[in-house]
Image (cartoon, rainbow, N blue to C red; front, side, top):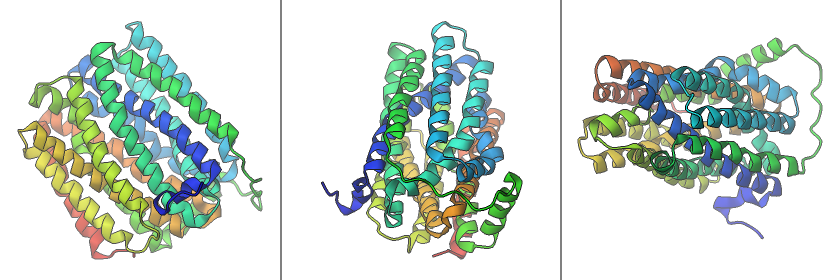
Length: 399
């Protein structure tokens, strides 16, 4: 069977297997994220804690992802991913146990989020750099990135909605249990891959020197550093609406966890549509223009969300936010991977992950601002900053 152009990466058996396993795991991940966001507010009644949980989960990306990328360049990526996915499954099982037995506290929730973040600091750049081994043909890499983004956002559409229902009907512990089980398919598909022997790297330079070489390589290429700077700008200010969605669901619209799930799924709908659009593209040429448009959409959507007192309008704003977010993140990912040399791919994707690691800093700042002032003001300020980032990148686009 030959897949159409917009699904061409699926012509690779290895990528098809990975795609299927990853899809199940991502749904579980979004259920975990939704349950944690709801429990953070239930346990603390604090917008600051709502921001603290994703901060703890994502801050290792900012601090350690480049080092994680070094490991992805030096070690067998499949074996590394199997170990990392297994560790995540164990953590989710532990979170299930403490939640179902009534022993979950804010401190435990934050600590487990931080441990999973440490794993993600290695897993994310390794998985991103693994794409080129899965598709076989480098020409299909951009399509694989777009399909991964589509998969991520289908999971974002399904996971929060299912989690919202489960939290209300059976409790958040069942969300964590399903997340733990969801790692089994991805581990199985990783083990079933048929990969050629990866060539050994020449030389045996120290890990620190590898890391420095990656920094120098990125700094000397505008095709790399411009999108690498755009990613942290968006991660810092572009996610204010979904971060504070639990506060809006409960205190602004006076609804329960089902509305939180609906809000996060609305963002997933927009993100999915954007990812499908990127999947139809056959070249990275012209992507910078779409990155600028995407950042502009995020800023406008945040402004609308901050001003809205009507739930349907807020949901529309979240759809638009999702569209813009994927245009920026998947667009930057594609631009970077189109220009990076294969032997430095892990380290450069580590820098890409480090940029996304600004998300926890944004989460903490947004949660703090919402606690000191109010949620609407926090989202409105982020809207203005995101629009400034779009303007700055648009002045000198890469391609």
